[in-house]
Length: 562
Image (cartoon, rainbow, N blue to C red; front, top):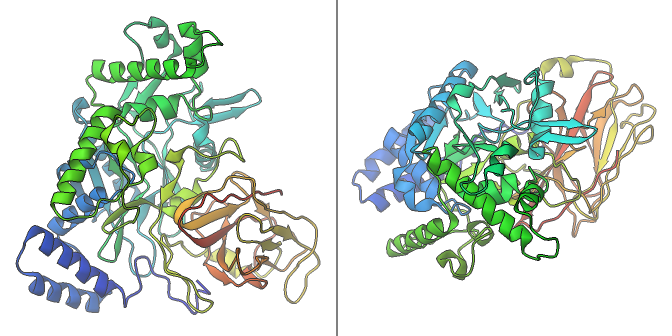
């Protein structure tokens, strides 16, 4: 957004689009279900929008929207069960304490004594003037900490940034640290504050990993949570957006091939290869070790009485889902690379065809703001695991005088930052992705702000950053690093050094360290400077967030040096 004084912040969609989207959703539901009464219901919703600038779906409308959002999730292979989704309507919950209790209740209902159920908990939506009362920053409700030391990482390296964020917020972790220390839950409130919610371990069922034929695998002391609860999800339909943690059932390959085997995760393949005594000259030793780990995961879950599925079963189930959708006259959306993850083969029915790659609504997608806040990768310059990527809804094209609606709105900076009269910040020069360069600098105060030393940063095309379909949300520098204001500059500025062809305009904002959101999004045309913040106290830690409309995902990367 160009400035808070000229552009009204919105949490859902522009007011002139809300009626059309609400009407489209109602029409879709009534037509699909063959329900009468569409005209009457639309009159009610239209009157509600006129009176309050929003509308409140009934429970049946909410449940329909949530289930169809799962049906529309192109990266999920388990969608045959979409009609059975348990929808928990918790839109009345607005406090941190109550949200914490609801997350624990979600875990209990989804775990169901080991007979895992797919569950979604829909929390209070964003108001038309700001973000939702509470949203969950943690990507999952059961994640293991990553403890950095000189000897490497103890725990799950994928959670280095999340662990650092939790400790910055006051969490100390267990006295005796280990590789499977469950992280607390992190939530953001509407005022931009970040908060730690203690995760009650009694609600998180874990499964120890062992193998019926190789008892030494139990000696590795591996384990994994029974239920995957993706907690940073946003449910979108009818022009509304709701924080909505969602859980399903694990597929064994996700645990064995990705979480436990990936080199930048728990990296257990060398231990499995050694335990099996496989020869270094065996070209298939990694495949044999992976299959053994698969066997161990499947056996362990089944022995513990916990539901789990496998890739062959899910591929056949997805083929039936496709048949049902086509029989209903609906277009099947899907991301082939996610639907056919290793160790699927051409013999699996989902392998041999491609799917529409669009994103219809209703939609269930990770919150891009939450993803950006927990961005980080243990091996900069390397591709992230596919499970670290996420879609966000496409945004409207931006113009210099009209900001695109932020998929996930941010709170303004804390008032005490804006009231300070002493200005001391760094000027920031940023460029749009890949070949563009980024420089951060500061120097003697000038009328237009500082644009010289004492420090600088450049970004090119060799480092990892958060990648989404449709919109890139990039944080400079990468967490846990940060910029710090000095007494030599007057304000924080950004300059777009793109060429206007490959690298065009973007939006930028300041995220003050320890706060959960930006001050406001500012449009930055090619070749021009823009002020992002003024009156900032000396020594204030901050990040620069950049938002770029990239259209379809191309895998671009950027590099930082600060």
